[in-house]
Amino acid sequence: MNERDAEVALERDRDAMRKKSQHIDLSDQNLLSLLLRLAIPSVIGLSINALQQLLNAIFVGSLGAQAIAAVSMTMPIVVFLASVAEGIGVGTASFISRHLGAGKDLEASRGASTALALAAPIGVIMTVALLLGLRGTFIVLGATSTILPIALDYATPLLLGSTVMLLNIVSGFIARAEGNTRFSMWTMLSAFILNALLDPLFIFLLDLGVRGAALATLLSQIAAISLYISYFAKRRGIVLVRISQVSLRVDRIRQLAFIGAPATMTSILSALAGMFLYAAAARFGDEFIAAVGIAVRIVTIGALPITGFCLGSQALLGFGWGARDFARVLKVAKLMLSITVAFSLAYSAAVMVFVRPLVRLFSDSDQVTNIAVSTCIVFHLFFGLYGIQSFVTTMLQALGRARLSAVVSFARQGYLFIPAVLLFPVISGFNGVLASQAIAELGAAMIALFVMFRQFAELRQGDRLNQPGIESAL
Image 1 (cartoon, rainbow, N blue to C red):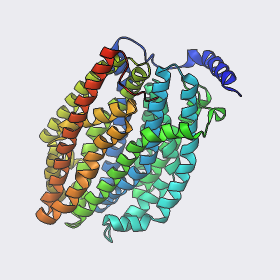
Image 2: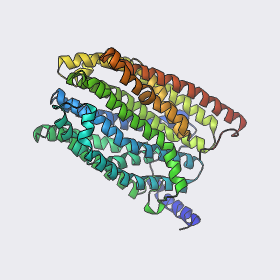
Image 3: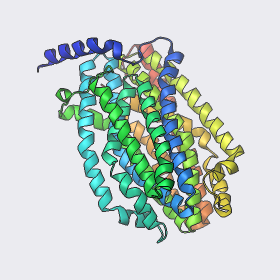
Image 4: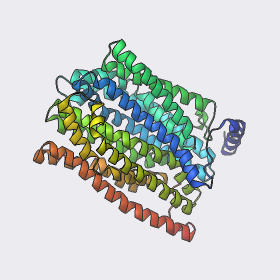
């Protein structure tokens, strides 16, 4: 099929399915309303994901400190696995929204189809590699003889669904990039409800322990991908995902990979940072590992809604950039910044006030609780600045600024945190572990602020000069 025939076929399919489409018009001039309609379903979706993690942690926490420590030590491995999917998803979402803004719908469909075609084999390869090296990975992470068998019981069935998880993540990015954040939300909600029902059944009634928690998560992932398959098969969105649209052209794959690579590396650095964090805590005993795991989960619960808001709004930034409407991009950016900062500050304050009852949800041990309370307080000292980091990273991804995106996103979990967590615990013991997180959070926010002001200045200049001076990211 030549280019002209492909465009005709695409338009015919889109006209036939237009009434079924649930997407939001990204060119709507009511920016605040449009931003909220895009972002709120995404916030709800990722908040549901956070609640799912919270629910699992509460159920697993009732099995003892070793169980929650084992599950916490699995998180860096899961993050490492998801990093590739996130990279593909971020690159694809930026590609789709920018090309939709430029009126190149056929190219947007090709990008989406190619991304899913690449995600499946990558998932299989990663699954095999992770399972073969699982025991050694946990040993490197600092798993003790009491935690190791529990960690293996949890991680093995969970990793069997790696490919499904990758496809779910990429599919969610595609749906959000075309403005259909609601479908992504309902998919996550359905998976959460199923997980909530299966957790007590598998963990307690069938007496499967942590393995039951992993199986419940696996089945909920399978349910989610089934919904996405139906979504694409019925062509309910703007972008049409079809085998005929898959294109392995080097330039197209390079565009997807170039924008997504910083996101992948950020997630990999996050996984490595988690490994170093738990390894540093392991020097002081199982209770310290459990306490750090609790603090990380509480931070994650606050971070996911912010991330969800930014992901839901990213399509609006990319669409405006693709249409070369710099004034619109700047207005959206300022709205996003004010909302993300307000939320991160409010969440940080709430954790400070209610830290002890929050920690008690995860552990009945007085020793673990006392350590976790102080850990949570330090971890949230500068969390109010997280909204700035998340917004700036999202903006740079949407505009196709891969290198600057890497500079900002690598700071918090990479070149600021990893050296600190390797050095400070040697000097100051467990207090050094806590200081590493706080220093990295503050430093990353300062870097994000500097980059943000420069990007705002460029957008203002582009608006004044009506496009010259800004290199196209398409």
